[in-house]
Amino acid sequence: MKKILICILLIGFIVILQSCGDDEQKPETTDNIESNTVEFEPGERVAYTPPKDQDIQAYNLKQQRAIIGSRSPSDTLALKEFVVNHYEQGTYLVDFDNTFTYNLSKSAVVYYNKGGNFVFGVVAKSKPGERLIKPDNIVGYNQSYIDLDSTDLGVAFFYLTLFEFTGSSFQVIWETPIPSHGGLRDMRLDKWSYKGTQYMRIDFYYARGSGHIDYNYFFINGIRERPHLLMTYKGIDFQRTLANVNNDNYPDYFEYLYVNTGTRIAVVDSIPFYWSGKDSAYISTRNKRLSRPY
View 1 (tube, rainbow, N blue to C red):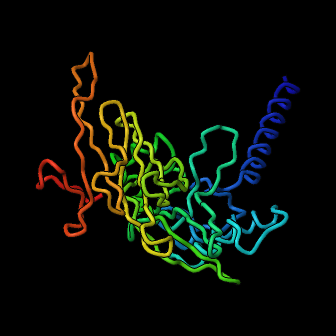
View 2: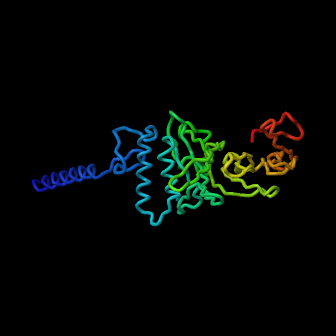
View 3: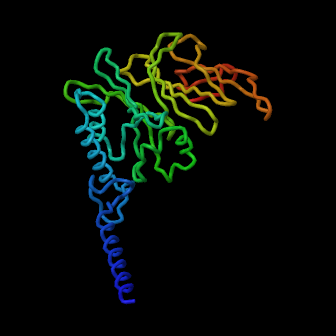
């Protein structure tokens, strides 16, 4: 009996020692950031502490510099560093949607080396005074629902930005808003077949309509000038396509009307809209009172 009691006490003592050891080895985390990256005060939340978020960005960039081999002064990592160092806190150079689980995400940038060393980038800014956005929450198909719950996840303001690298650093040539808060897919430089005008097409998912929205930025007077925005889209029962309605330098579009009976979906009409410089809006050719800003 005495031996059994001693064994029970010994086992209990070993369990207590193991529990203490686990507590000592368990890393403290805040918002999924390991404690060996930056230090946090007890109860501190990164999403509401812009300086700490900026420290995390700077630390992550430091780690990336350590593992990247050959680099150029104007590479994407240098652009990320520029954004962290020169933009307001809570601002990010975002990534494209990672369409395959095991692919590495690519930064939302397009390099353009005609007439200079230019980079088009998609930058997302947090709404001042509110919860910081998390880049993963604004990119991808499911994140196109964010407009329904944006206040809980932070409100993202997207911008298409043209950077130029001039020997030693980047400078911002212009930035223009992208009228969406989430669901970025990708972007690419394209050319308008009617006039040969280049434009940047930025594609966003639109999950609620089982479709997508393209924000098309046309460089009417070259890339150094702020571009002209025209929005096109396509879904189950809605569509807007790029067109040439009045043969000027600005792109136009056709708006399609659908009938959806529940068993049948069909196009019943298409309405032309043209750009009016006088009104700074797109105007319907059938009804002058019908206008759209882009």
